[in-house]
Length: 323
Ligand code: F6P
Image 1 (cartoon, rainbow, N blue to C red):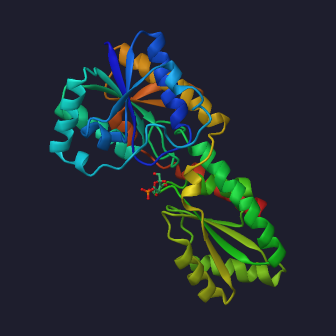
Image 2: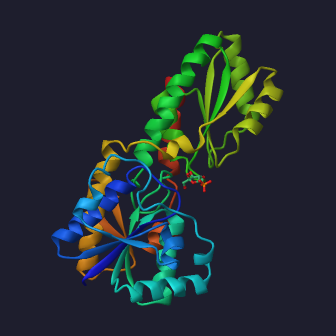
Image 3: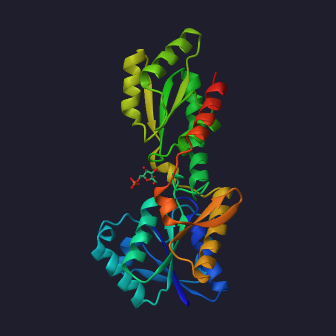
């Protein structure tokens, strides 16, 4: 192996740059050349790539987003697009590829290996923390911090004006950001996919608490459960109180990665390069406990078991402490 490629794909996540830096510098130490592929699979199909060396990744460790840019490519979903991508990789003598991204990006790597002769290793980069067999994905820690910072600020006005707020956080069907931010932020309630709570029960709870003198509420809403405007309106209708919606949106994807995400990205990037060198393919770098290992793309993409018990336990503590 002489030359490898690296790309970031799907939604950007804080820490992707730290992973790129780690891939490039580890590869250089191992005597490999690196091509940075721009705009994920979209740029790969278009042949957009740049030469990367240890100096070209200086000062990106602390930056959010991805210097390689990213995209959600429609063309790459088609086999014709995947074959074009393989041709570009062959033309540029790229023997191995590090794919940094979430579920869709890793499924892209599966497709590449199916249609052509390329070895890929995935690095989990998504704020959602929704991949299987890994405790964490790059970006999830910073995203929780960002949501928490917003919740703390919203708390000031919630308390001062004695209002009810529904704060919607990202995460697709995975409640990680919602549950962690709720616990850390002292939220009164959390609505997430998989919970058995319905809005009638929440309304009842608010009325009972109100009768005892509790007037301010922060309800964290995972986007997989519903949207803040609709849920606020329904709770308002059920309680007769004013309920304000806040959607945190893409602020949760931005900002300088925090220490856990920088560390995770740095060790995973290096691990991915070493995995390629040792002949591995079709696997994602995963963290379990404190150690890294490789898991099949299948396990990573399709065998995610929501830890319902853990979610329920964290939810119970959140509720206990909000009493
Ligand atoms: O997967 C990351 C994520 O931010 C999700 O939490 C969210 O649902 C989605 O991406 C938003 O995607 P886009 O930026 O393409 O609208």
